[in-house]
Amino acid sequence: MSGDGGPAGRVNLRSALRQAFRVAIEGLSRDGIASISAAEIPALLEQVRETADAAFGDYSGTMAMALAKRAGAKPRDVAVEIIRRLQSAPGYADLFEPPGDPVGPGFINVRVRDDALAAAVGHAVADERLGVTAVAEPQRVVVDFSSPNVAKPMHVGHIRSTVIGDAIARILRFRGHHVITDNHLGDWGTQFGMILWGWKHCRDDAAFAADPTAELGRLYRLVRKVADAKPEELAADPVAAALVAAHPDAAREVLAETAKLHEGDPENRALWERFMPVCRGEIDRIYQRLHVTFDHTLGESFFHPLLGGVVADLLAAGLARESRGAIGVFLGGEDDPPLLIRKADGAFLYATTDLATIRWRREHWKPDRILYVVDHRQSQHFEQVFETARRWGCGAVDLVHVAFGTVLGEDGKPFKTRAGDTVGLEALLDEGVERAAAIVGSGDEGRAGMSDEDRRHVAETVGIGAIKYADLSQNRTTDYVFSFDKMLQLTGNTAAYMQYAVARVEGIFTKGGVDREALRRAGHGVQVSDPRERALALELLRFGEVLEDVEADSRPNVLTAWLYDVAGRYSTFYDALPVLKAAGADRDSRLALCDLTGRVLRRGLELLGIGTVEKM
Ligand code: ARG
Image (cartoon, rainbow, N blue to C red):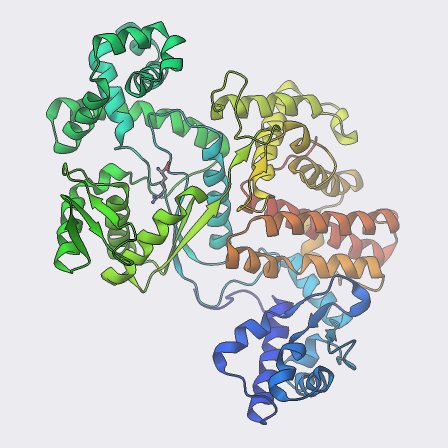
């Protein structure tokens, strides 16, 4: 697929305007008013943005200020020159009104023509893609996300990677990219050494037969305590204390079990193969509840056979060398810590696997870009791995660490339960759903008859949606405070509010007995004569721009913020203007705006992995 590929009439207003600005700026350069290199233009075009206040037009270009110095002219005069060229840029006049004079120090304010706006929004109503253009140059993008270390219980921290990664993958796909999702499971690490050791020394066969997941979880927690041998933990756990007394060398033995697994020891390999389905079953239950799927789940174990080759290759390429028995890639000066790829005892490292994975993906998937949705504490790891990969010949692939902060409790410390354990993910989802059940049926539409099954379904959708949205609506790089009370509020920028907005907008069609399909087919013109109609229409048409901005920075919170704005514009419109009670063309036009609003909100939530309901 290349270009838009959709019906004529799909229009990204900001892109069209930036294109016209490009022509104008190139004209400035050509005419010798200011010399501007081609490389500088994209950053200048970024300075064409929607305005916060309709009084200043719909979009504003602010680059005259940046260009004034080199033009040796006043910003205002540069703006005048840009405006002159803008008006005659191809396509400008079809969509935008003549710009008028610069405002203030040199702002170029542009208003969308009402007829163009009405036509574009009319097309969006009739359009599957809601007027959103696809990218002109689709890329192959791998999204590496979730990637928990299995055999350890999944906790609240894993939700961030899972939810953010899933949203980004959905959005990139909708934009027209070829997306490949991969859950890079930690299925090969020391946690298996712990379980193997536990299995051999303290398993409970009956418990394993009854509930294998619980028994493996118990072994993991127990052996971790035994291996760590922290006096305060042992004092509270006599079973662990007795094991430490009987096996003073347990920590080393655990590592030896991992090493044996990696060397292909048949007994450990067979046990690993027995444990893996149990571990996978546990995480798959969570993915099912979150409605998250992956194209691939190639865990670390999959890449193990390639690791020796990676080390040999990096040595041969002169990128790695030995240092005190270990092998590392020296990226900086002699004093900078190298990226270790083989320990002195022969064990490979996390980084070795990541390097093998990059090479494998490059060979098999030929990506243009790989996004790693991983905790910010791994920033240094990724910097070093990416730099090594570039020197190793993977420079053509754009490698990006999409980092995120920590989930905090309301006390501002990393989120924990009272017992001091990080909260298990499943218990957390259950609590969200349980609390959501309390608000189900509180809306007007909801009160009128809901079966128990409906209620359960709505509570699940609202509860899971709340948890996801709370995460996605944060700036991902900052830590965020996990608060059920806040995330389940029916007002403010929450999933519950957005889901309620969708139910309300769409309730109009049931209430009025309006056939939405027929409404779309009829292609009634949409009118934007009232400022509130106009503001809503313009906002709805920004969907494509917003998704472009989400992609640029991998920031789903740009989408949540915008959906909240859409809901606000809709409220203003709906509170001021009659819809079902309006007559003739007004009624059809406003119903068309309602229809598009409902679909845009629903699609927006869907791109975040959040479901909607008919009634709350
Ligand atoms: N399993 C790792 C962890 O839980 C995350 C893996 C992220 N992906 C990657 N390619 N390194 O910390």
